[in-house]
Image 1 (cartoon, rainbow, N blue to C red):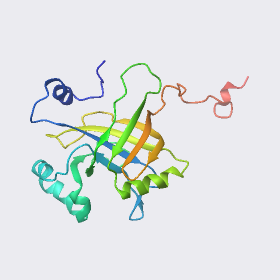
Image 2 (cartoon, helix red, strand yellow; image 1 turned 90 degrees about the vertical axis):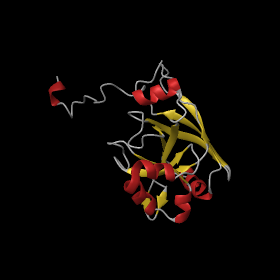
Image 3 (cartoon, helix red, strand yellow; image 1 turned 180 degrees about the vertical axis):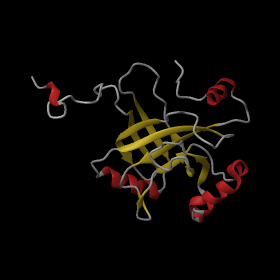
Image 4 (cartoon, one colour; image 1 turned 45 degrees about the vertical axis):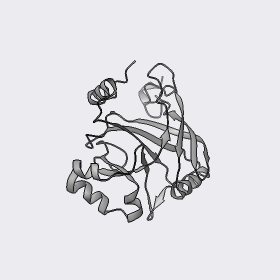
Length: 207
């Protein structure tokens, strides 16, 4: 069953596999303990090689401004600069850099399973990502993972609306690899409607 959240453009890319259009898979990892320069910031990675020339060609001065805000090492690792969708919890509507990093994940099937679960593996992680995940491991808060696919010809937004959001658990970290189980946020077991009708909130219910 096709995923209705995917755009027509990416469905066409999957169906025809044109040589000049590549689907770029990205992950955003978020946790309050991911602190950089005194602020909580997400980790964003793309399954791609290091490349800035392509994104400068598509975004020009706007992409250049993003790259200018990075130090030399961070800029060298960039594999994509693309825009986050409007309404996102972080950096809504802004162009942001994604670190080039190999990872493996299999998208959950579009079916009636209440809470699909997948395994996510990130290879060749650096010390910086490992440090952040080690800090998250001792926290009570779950790591949130957002999957966004982009097309190599379009950096103006992800090709999935809304993006797929999951929680990451059972995380194992070493100097080379991060492995965790990602579960789609559990909407299947939430009450509907979500309001709880109590006498205190709705006095008219009292008999």
